Length: 495
Ligand code: B12
Ligand code: SF4
Image (cartoon, rainbow, N blue to C red; front, side, top):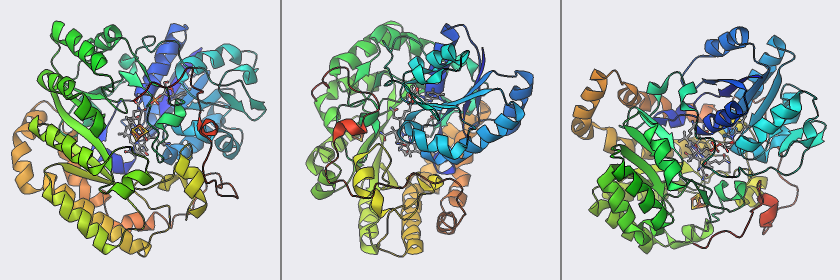
């Protein structure tokens, strides 16, 4: 079959700092190619809708599959599906990905027949099974499938992550992917899932709290296929197991692979496996993201982060001693007042790290969705991007945004201000010489994007697509299994 896979556009707020290749869709593409399908990929993060229109007429796909990892993209994808159904009425339209798996029935209903199927869970297994069944249009037998006629059996996990390494060759504009000064940058996955269970996160519920990995051979092989000098390791928590990180490093050293790396990990993992991170530092690890989330014991407990301020501080010291460029995330509670924002600003200015602030947002598939969703002030999908307040704010909403933007601006100036930029000017000049302007451009976009008027006014837009209304009764302690998309195959590994 001719299959067109589509990634929706990037959201402005994340595009300032990065734009990444659609790794999940590239893996789904690899599985479909292995099944003999003719596959093309359009990434609307880096190309215009005209390119999609061109593929619809030129390639005339039998099936179009959308990636819906993010709730905020649901309206765009629903509208695109409605448009494609008018252009190609016989075309099978399906969607899959992280977020849509948690709201599948609801998205199907709102699409009013424009989306035929939502595939829950991992796409490497579900997409080929769907297309195999598509000829007879008996879709309810497909694991993970949800259709208006009913749902199929539970989604299946891919047998081995070594299968279906991403079909990176399908991307037409790879030079547009970057993360900060790593421009251009590719992405790679070494492990999947997370054994922790933070209350605001759906990484663990999607994969049934399981944790799997590629073999070091396959991981190194995939790295060797990457041409870009920078690589974002997308694992939720990198190098949970020291020996695995060591083995991949050994393979890369043997193959003399030299890149710059960016990864995300937990503070306690960094402390426990310090030597592995030091080894990766020698291999080219330059940037690290640590999800601190809260500065105080109470906040960490509320998020069930299973760490302490002492552990977090120790991890920061280790990262500093390694000379890494570290970004940390703090979750802004809608309950924050001016004094709290000022405290966080002062703290953030007192540490050398890049401090990123996101707004606490209950996502479907998380525990907080079940415990907090009844308090939501909006169900507009577009506002669920961790840059908007969707829970009641203690300050009047506009004031909240003023404080938030003030804080984000102060923190950004720390790293994008004149003095800071003087340090990176050499990097920027070299990138421009190579025709890479992604990082330079983002610097000028900041004030336009982070803007209290704009963020506030985005709440006033009429919304055509809304999230499912939360359950009538609050759930005090939700059962874990109810949250899972994939049931764990075996007990989660101890952490
Ligand atoms: C890279 C990444 C990003 C990139 C996006 C890159 C891109 N172009 O896709 C950036 C940095 C921009 C980003 C931003 C955000 N992200 Co993010 N991100 C990730 C991350 C770390 C890796 C994604 C990835 O590549 N995984 C590896 C690939 C192989 O898996 P995958 O994409 O999930 O694809 C599989 C399935 O989902 C499915 N699938 C995917 N697409 C399709 C399509 C079809 C047709 C089918 C059938 C199946 C299918 O099959 C794939 C293979 O199994 C994940 C965590 C994680 N480890 O997955 C978080 C994660 C997805 N992000 C998350 C969040 C919350 C965000 C932000 C809202 C906040 C933030 N953390 O910055 C923003 C919002 C952006 C927005 N648009 O709204 C949450 C999702 C929560 C939720 N329920 O929505 C996650 C799970 C992190 C977390 N621990 O909370 N993110
Ligand atoms: S450790 Fe990170 S990925 Fe794992 S559950 Fe917590 S926030 Fe999610």
